[in-house]
Every structure is written in C-alpha cells, then in structure tokens.
Length: 414
Ligand SMILES: Nc1ncnc2c1ncn2[C@@H]1O[C@H](COP(=O)(O)OP(=O)(O)OP(=O)(O)O)[C@@H](O)[C@H]1O
Ligand SMILES: O=C(O)[C@@H](O)C(=O)CO
Image 1 (cartoon, rainbow, N blue to C red):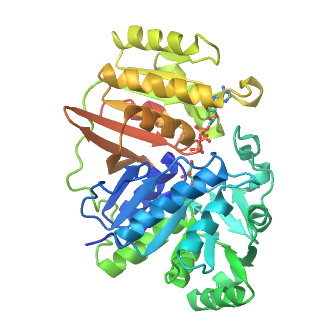
Image 2: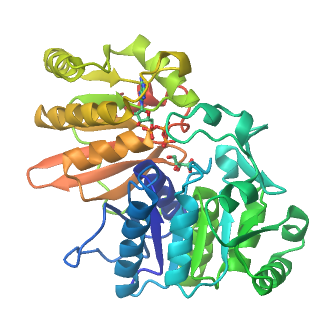
Image 3: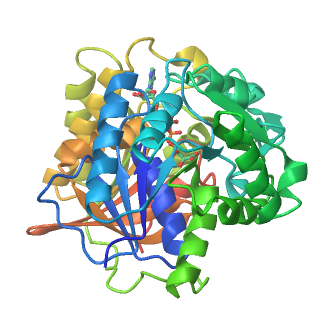
C-alpha cells in the first residue's frame, strides 16, 4: 500500500520532529535523509518523511530539491504533502518557506495552502497571524539572534508576504473557534479572493485538530510538528491505526546499541546553550574553535578521550557575543568530520544539537534512512540506523528542543 502522507522537511531535526509526531499519531513512519532516487526502497508504511537540508540554501536550490521529492512521492501514490517548516518559521526575505510552498502548491494544482507553524507542545502559538514563542512574540524571542535566519518580525502574513509574489491571507482564531466548517468556508472565501497562502491561527491542540479537519482536502499543507500531529491523527483514524498510546510503530525498533556516546553541539539556540552548560559539568568536553587547527585539535582530543571515557562532548555552541562571524559552514563541516571519526572509533550513539549541524553530520555519516524509535524528549526521537556490520543510534535535537538535562540523559546507560 502507498503511504497516505508524504512530508518534505526543510531540515533534519525538523524531519525527526515531524516523524515523531506521525509515529505518535499511530502512523508507521519511515524517515529518509536526502533526496530519494528511483531505486530507493521504502518499507511498508503509512507516512514517509524526507529530510532535506534546504532551510538556509539559496531559494532556487531549495525549490528544486523540494519539488523533486514531491514528484518522487507523487510517483509512489502519495496524494497529500505536508511541508514541514520550523515552528519558529526560520527563513529570510529571500525564502525559503515562501518559494518552496509556492512550488509545492503549483505542483499540486495551484490551490490555496494552509500555513500554520503553531506547535503548542513546544510553546509555539499563532494569534492574529503573529507567532509567539512561549509568552514572547517571535521577534522578541532568542530567535532574533539566530546566526543564519534571525527572526525580527512576528507577523507571519507580513513575513511570508515578503517571500512570495502571491497573496497571503489570515484565518483568525475567532473563525477557528467556530469549527472546521467555518474554517473551510473562510479558506474558500480567501481562495475566491486570489489568496494562495492562508496563515491560520492556533493557540492549542484543539485548534490544530480543527484546522486539520478543515484542510484535509488540500494537496499541500505547511506547518510544524503541531499541525502534523493533527493531520497524522486524522489519517491514522481513517486508516484505523491511531491508538493514541504513543507506542504505535514501536514493533521491530531495536534497543540502543552498545559503545561510547559522542555529543556534538553546533546549535547556538538558548535551550542548547543551557544543555551544553549542564553537559560540560557531567562529561569531558572540548570546544571546537573556528580556526585552521580547530578540526585537527578536536579529532586528536576525541581519540584520546574515547580511549578512557564512555561519553564525551565536542561543541561549537556560543552565545551571541562569542560567535565567530562567517564560520557557520566551517563549524558544521568540522563537527560532521568529528562525527565520521566517532563512528569509525565505534561510537554506538551520536547525539547532535542543531538542524543544520545534524544535516551535515548525517550526510558525513552516509546515513540514508532510519527507523524512528522512542522519544528522549518531545520531538526528539532516537533514530536507529542499520548499516552492514554496524548499529548506530542518532539523536538529532532541534536547537530549541529538550529539557536542560537532555544531553546528559542521552548519554546515560539505557
Ligand atoms: N561559535 C559559532 N560561531 C558562529 N557560528 C556558529 C558557532 N557555532 C555554531 N555556529 C553555526 O550556527 C548554525 C546553527 O544552526 P543549527 O541549525 O545547527 O542550530 P539551530 O538553528 O539552533 O537548530 P535548529 O535549526 O534545529 O533550530 C550552524 O550553521 C553552526 O555551524
Ligand atoms: O519545528 C521546529 O521547531 C523544529 O522541528 C525544527 O524544525 C528545528 O530545526
């Protein structure tokens, strides 16, 4: 049977977040890293999530890759596509959420799309089109200092309007509170007025369930893990697989493999900085610096440390005043090289903080897919990778996700 749902995710931690949400909704979920090809074999599943690394690349590249994945999915019978963007709407005026949503919408017949990054369980809500992170507007949250996509405007209608030539409209909370039929009517009115993207308010999971029911007929929906959970539950209910106990899909998921645990932190997000500070107190840690010898020093330190330690951390994470301008790509590449060496040295678990960083690490490890396992924290599932002769578990942590002790717990004996 073809998967009912396909998801194109714009980064690797976002893909794991959405895969965990689908799995929690009772859908058998397969996660693929990078563009699949004609020979990619997808095991029997209800949902397929493809992780791209398109959040911060030039918009034309993001569009081409996302469109290719959408066409690949259509070739496998997928009728509904979910475009997973960040719950903090990480993007710039050049894109990539607008251009990618435009391209995916065109491919689906040019119909109106719903855009709703609310993810209440992660503290993201949308009210009057404005995105809130906890109790602060996005533009007053730590995301305003993001090294790649600083978010300085909380008004999503305005933000998206700068990224697309199409009209952007709003379905306000008062309409969402009137139920799915009212939202569907509002969407039809917006479509009749030529609106392409309908930013939709939601401040609680019940609102997302309403939006999911109202938008179930649309070929494209854009959002984060919150709306994905609602769409997944609707799909699971239709398929008869939703059991709501969070264990669906657990069959066949192996335990965590033996071997040392290596933590690699490249995220500079507020939650990660706190997690890194705590982890530094609990395990040997090395700061990889943005200079010529930074990588060689880190590799030497890793080899020496793993001779006697069963958990270590290498990090580049730094608060705003202590970052190395222009060093993002170098630091991602360096942490990726460290990951490859850690795998050669027999690491059983590699824990990565940061979406861009995770993308670089997964690519360097040559991992093409994984079975989605139990969550270490909400939206942060263990990914079980089986390669000939080796077992490896990856934990790819979105920058702002996880409790302060996540990195410590992830390194403890299972
Ligand atoms: N000390 C530093 N100086 C400058 N850039 C850094 C430094 N440390 C990390 N970076 C870069 O900052 C970027 C952080 O992005 P990344 O996506 O990994 O984390 P994040 O945005 O917090 O996570 P997410 O995308 O999951 O929210 C990476 O490109 C990384 O290389
Ligand atoms: O939606 C989120 O916040 C995360 O899944 C993510 O995309 C961070 O990279």
